[in-house]
Image (cartoon, rainbow, N blue to C red; front, top):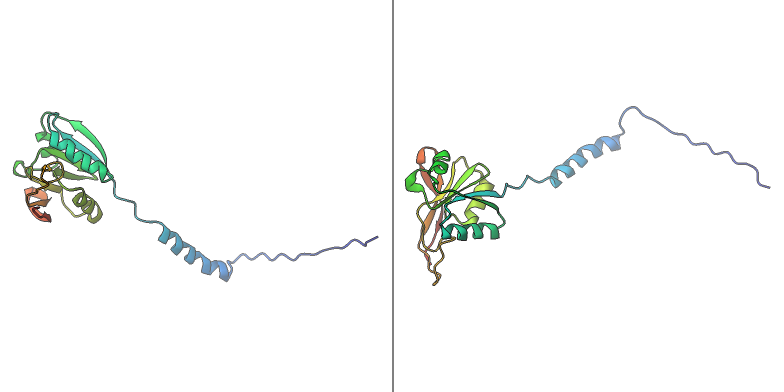
Length: 168
């Protein structure tokens, strides 16, 4: 028969953090900060268009294919929407969209909207005045495109060139 064995354990409890814990804390915070990325720019786009505009549908298709979640609202008069967002008549087009606090007027390419959301400039938004042939939603059967510019819309109707799109 075996004799009973008594085991003793010594447990040490310290009220001050160990050096190992002290060193691990900042490292863990840095790892967590590295894993946490900036929140992606909102990609929800509200598009205001008239019921009879076909090229607007084409532009919405471009934006949807580029990964934007589009919500279309049809109105017979877009002037109040444009006025609300600071788009003067000479800089207008056939549809107006709003995304993340910016206005997007006309046939602005999806890449320009993505850049706007990434850079977040102090501006009202972007505009492609008129309806340039070959711009998104205004494609031509022969693939031709006229040169046009996407303008950054600033307070007071001022603009600056945001992107240039060459003729093709």
